[in-house]
Length: 472
Image 1 (cartoon, one colour):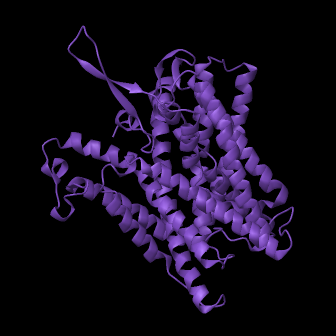
Image 2 (cartoon, rainbow, N blue to C red):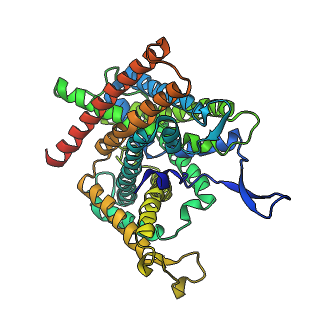
Image 3 (cartoon, rainbow, N blue to C red):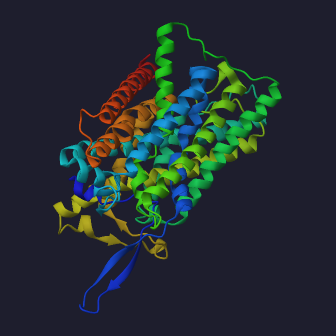
């Protein structure tokens, strides 16, 4: 499976419009890209991609870091992410960042054209890992939310001290079965309403989580927490918990991967780069505000007892219907989000099968099921096999490691440095033709190395957390 067929695919929730263009001097016509986006559509796309399940772990991360380091760390990650996308603004056009003439409509295209095939190969691996990790995290998070709805209703009926235990494995399997069914609809991620639903759901549970935290603070009559954060039995344990917290925060912030694809939807004038810089500041401000609210209000409400997942750790019992609604929003968001980030993997694998077996009916033939003949659904055995296998593997990994904060930490740390730091910096330096010994290049290299050290620290600490949770 090569890079070329992979990099052609855009993120599924971004709509691309084409118009037919014909010339009077020829009998041929061609499709010309019509870019109709503006700063508001771009802002909606970025916020939809940025605000996700990672927001639910930020209160726990704040609890590990304390009232000074917690907010400062979030602001630092926000600044780093903003720096990354400012650098990417200059990579939309190549070889000249101002005049082009080539446009790089997705992240991988930009890496390949600017840095070459070797870098693009490594970048492709990082991007694939990013999609796979999201499938695992979404499975764990959705199962936790289904479980939380069950618990919430149980506590409401039987009292807050009732024993309401539910095994999460069954809910992961249920979520996996839902994904197997939904993944058989070929155009599901391209449905126009998907991005709207995802945005509404993510805003809804983020606002509800923040509001519940604020209400709890008012009920308590005090702001809980401390400057140094949650105390640990040993200094080394504190060090590892801080590493996990950094990984959780790293998971929540970046939107670099979809940035160029959003930029490719914009109409000009004004220049796309100018619009995207403005949009980046707006998006970063909105997401950082939500993250500080969720993290801050959650920590202020529970202090040292802050749960790993703000909506499923049962600091909130009432109003139970609002907790249920918030978790239902999480589930609906992640059902669609799973497909959005899995479709590029599906498309890549299926293109390989199509080329490898051009005459196979198993690969190419679509079957219409009579009970579903009125729906946009055609059963393809190759698609059924490939997508079911992928979902089964992701569900199996989630069942083996159902540890929300630890897995989110690993997921955040594993791709943060290459996708958010290394490739944007290298592309910017190459595009601007900045030589290695220049002061600007030196500053960016130091920036890259510092971020690498932080990412490795978060990754190692989160891996240790997974191992301890699984085998400790």
